[in-house]
Image 1 (cartoon, rainbow, N blue to C red):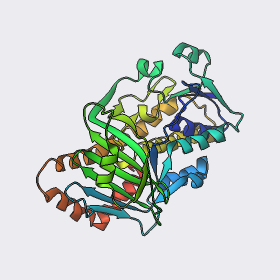
Image 2: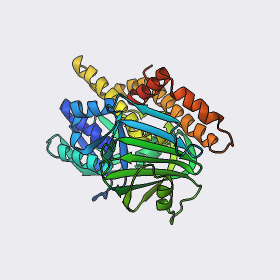
Image 3: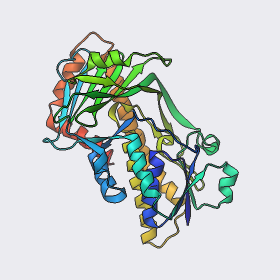
Image 4: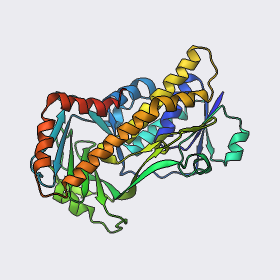
Length: 360
């Protein structure tokens, strides 16, 4: 049987690498002939998802950078963290450059005869190919507008500015810093001993083309002796949750299902958990000798939609909590968070939640 994946982003390529291991032929439809990758973008992957990647998809050890500590600050507590997470000096999550992961995933796919990269086609032409399953990861495709426009959305009135800083060598550069500033959260995410990724989610209704991110980086810089700040990229921040995941033999996937604020770095992790679930459902069909058909999509929605929504809502609550805290002239919220964070049971609960998602 043949599967069609619309889009060639990280989620599409990861899913394709999983499907070919089940001896399924996969056509990947790309909208662009020559993709240019944003080299300022990075993503965080939880430890459990790294383990899954390395054992079940491809080994990505050589391109990841392990984070062993997380420290959280606010504008009112810029010198002393109000929250910190560690795991006995063990990995909590890892940071990877988007374009490097995309390159490795594509490189592995091109070795396999079951994969074909094709130019994207319209809905009617895709149907003519009589694919058993169609998985749509392209938000701009005709199929998205036709079947997957009914969703819950939220505009954060924010834009994320991303860049990379070069700095003097930091031995054990394995601590991620997040500061909930008055203008929005800024994160410093190490990617090597001499480079760190920066993501600043600025609360503004319109994009500021001449935004001075260098000024903000220098103001909130936690420890680095900066040598160079690279050019930045910018994108609007919105969250969305699709009301219905599938239509007949077409499944929406990736950011089409759930898009969340990047403050906790959980967007790609949610998609990886979706991939694991979809993979397990396919394996179950194969083990029982049953056809792999669209009934899988019904089971996928039944098992994932409520978890995805609750997890996204929790991420949004964290954003709104610190957003509110930055507007009030009181240290009461900070002190409450600090007390809660020192509770080992609660601290461990949040670490497990970020690592594995909801288990209900």
